Length: 146
Image (cartoon, rainbow, N blue to C red; front, side):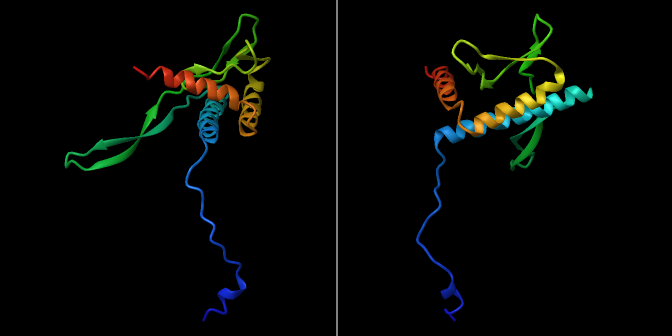
């Protein structure tokens, strides 16, 4: 009976239960960038985009359920004075400073918005913004301390 399992290489390795804080911050920002990409696609198509989030509600019977409710997604970009589009990357309510003293990305046309967001998403995946995300996270947490 054990001869079938004998061909497998067995080990006592366990799956790691925790994710590092840096990876959590990257995942949070990537989720928000994905929403911005969806919003930009809707904007270019001339339609509206409404994100959703899960919310726990109680029924009349007192039973708790999770339901999807719409949420407003605000654009991270705006039209700059020079006629181009400016884009901020946000972590929570904080604007992430991409380079020292510079937090906005200048984009020439609306069609370049989605590729720019996807490029930023790749940079976040590669860990290029980890230091900036950590400082934004610390500043964000300081706002909750009494």
